[in-house]
Image (cartoon, protein in one colour):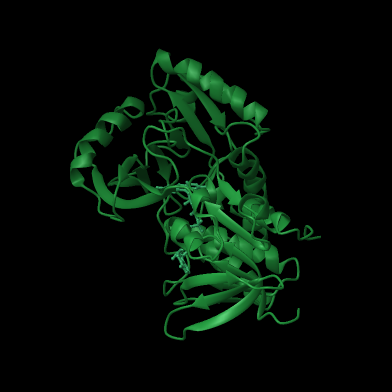
Length: 374
Ligand SMILES: Cc1cc2nc3c(=O)[nH]c(=O)nc-3n(C[C@H](O)[C@H](O)[C@H](O)COP(=O)(O)OP(=O)(O)OC[C@H]3O[C@@H](n4cnc5c(N)ncnc54)[C@H](O)[C@@H]3O)c2cc1C
């Protein structure tokens, strides 16, 4: 390393930024991860379902399909190796009326094409025998799906970066960057100890700020920056005993996997997230949405007691499509896309971003031309 403070600077200490930092550190790069907040993992990575997705739904050949399946396999191995809590509880995708059976079959075929292991078609009776209390006319069983401690995972990634000599620095917002004449970037960092650093590689993984950060990189072609849409999802928590062990998912809705059931690692039942396109970064949960949740959940759990749902939390998906547009793939833009050597910019890292994070880190390193770690 000559003339650079760091080999690589990553913007954003969410699950994806930390996984990128880890992938680069494993390739012998000196890494700094900049985080604007006072703690890591306070963005999209702290307001989601913490589900490890098997990779059933995504179009074959897409980044989402490939990185979800490889990321999921890598994630289970990582959680084992680093003793981070998870439960491979499996999932049932349920049809609650005959009209949904064809969709289940389409998902089963898609899952097979995506190389997802162990998917089996069940009759309604078989599904209901597995989960008494469930109502289903047919189902798909996905034993590779699970739930995990996403915060423990992020702490572990941070530890790996630091063990390799890297740094994860809070209260250090990326402000702007400019390419250096001989390669690399000069990066202005704000916060209490504002400074300027030089790094050979720059990776932007700032979640909901992806567009703002890309626009603050001198020479970044503004026309290639996708529009940002907030896809809000709210959750309701069940007061009372969790009715099922497995994740229960009706077929996806347009733009999201839709409201589902999960038993979290603490044993509590949670339903959500729905999807509403909103204009502001607002995490309130309107109790009036409960009515739609009762309706929806009773299609697969008719015994849901009146008054049992309590407003819980909300998350915002960093979407790059509007309500009437098709849902696009992840964007992992490298030099071939934006023309800036040494830069990878991420956009639209919504679900299954958490599951895919380790694989996204590997993909980013590859796009920077760094050889795979042994
Ligand atoms: C409701 C909901 C449910 C979901 N459920 C699942 C699920 O079950 N399974 C799954 O796999 N995925 C799920 N996802 C998707 C997953 O949560 C995201 O893909 C993932 O968390 C994105 O991580 P990230 O690191 O890209 O973003 P973030 O976690 O938002 O991290 C970005 C970080 O960058 C920081 N930052 C922003 N601007 C700057 C700046 N200028 N300088 C420095 N730092 C900056 C932010 O503070 C933040 O910490 C869900 C998402 C939502 C919204």
